[in-house]
Length: 40
Figure 1: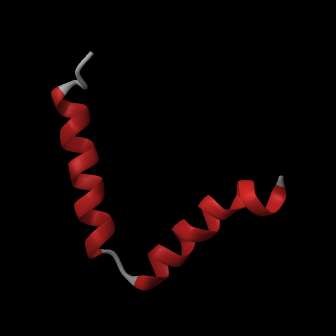
Figure 2: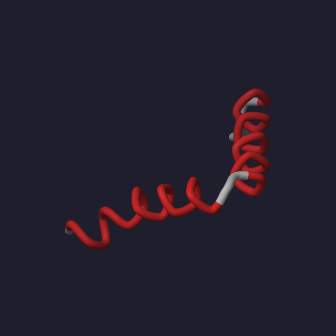
């Protein structure tokens, strides 16, 4: 089953935005993704 085209474009845009984002944004992302490891 293939991904819808708009979903692929959205993921691609998010990856580009993630690469171009600042270190502060990256740190916030890391904190969010660290919740399961720390909390649980």
